[in-house]
Length: 137
Image (cartoon, rainbow, N blue to C red):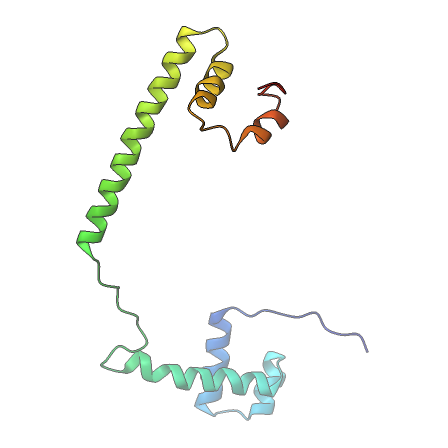
C-alpha cells in the first residue's frame, strides 16, 4: 500500500469539521469517513476548538493579546540617535563627493585618506583582495 502524501488543511476546513464534531449529529467514524480524515485528527481539532472558545467568549479577552505599552521617551531617543547618524553620514557623503570632484582617481584618494587616518588598517586585507589597495604600503 502506497503512503498518502501529507496534506495541509486550511483553518476554515478545520473549523467546519470541529464544529460538526461538537454538534454530535454524526458519530466520529462517520465524520472521519465523510471528510477523509483520521478520527484522532478530528478529536484533536475538536479539543482545540473547545479550549479556544473560552478565550473568544470570555470577558477578560485572554485570547486576544493587548498591544504592548509604548515608551515615548525611548522612541524619541531612538529618533534623535537616527537623526544624528543620518546627519553624520550625509556629511561624510558630501566629503567623499568633494574628494571625487577634486581628483581624477577618487577611490584611491579615499583609500589613502582612510589609510592616513588609520581607519582602513584593519580592512587592508579586504581592500587588497578586491584589488583596491596595492601590495605596497
